[in-house]
Image (cartoon, rainbow, N blue to C red; front, side):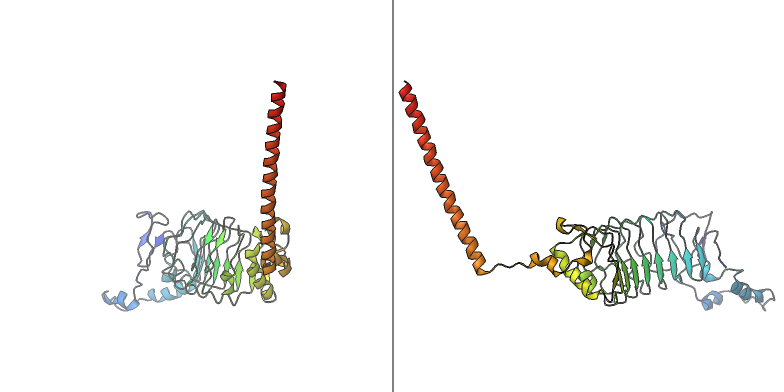
Length: 334
């Protein structure tokens, strides 16, 4: 049974309602100490023998008629149910300041969120699924996932991310799926962006602005099963050969969107499917010169220099003869 909360309630029981308005995103995110049941009753006077009506409270909580403490801090405009918080499609410009500390599934999709505060996920150690799909994110703060050790699914698609820095997901060792698709401004993925994600199975980098991807960014992902890289303006030069060779060797174990991945340059391979390029396509990248080649180049250079000197000498003589002939003609006319 879904419940909507009329106000923002903190973990310590304080309600932030009309009498104490708090703008969305203005609260500093820190873990609030959760009171123990023994501590709560230790400072209260003896209430006397239990009343029959009070015996119905646990049953009403279990039935969902009365909200339990775990769902008491459901943010305004969000819906909370079974450790899932759904704030999607609410036109939010910032993240909710407080969430139930036992949140496992958090959806902030289809909003207008432009930034996530540093340390926002610090209190939510049970978080498994996080969706920030279809927002206005340009970058994420360093260490955002430092305490998200149980996070398994992360959706950052349809944003304005420009780069993926080193160690961005380093502490989130349980990540199994990362969706970074449809970030048209995503031009760079650091070679150590996915470092430490041994359990990562699905990675979506499709429809971005990537022209190059380092082999180091992927070779540390032993569990990778699905890789989506189509829809990017790949420049299939010599620097891409190590990555393509690695992908060809893993194509049986790793499903890729081979039909959508095409080269945008250089001109000789423009429009060619990325996975159609073979070692022969990069043959020019491995040309080496022998001693005979160097001697031939030196000989040609010497001949060209001699020919240049001889040409200049002949041009000088010709110019001098023309000058003398012109001067002699003038003297005869006089």
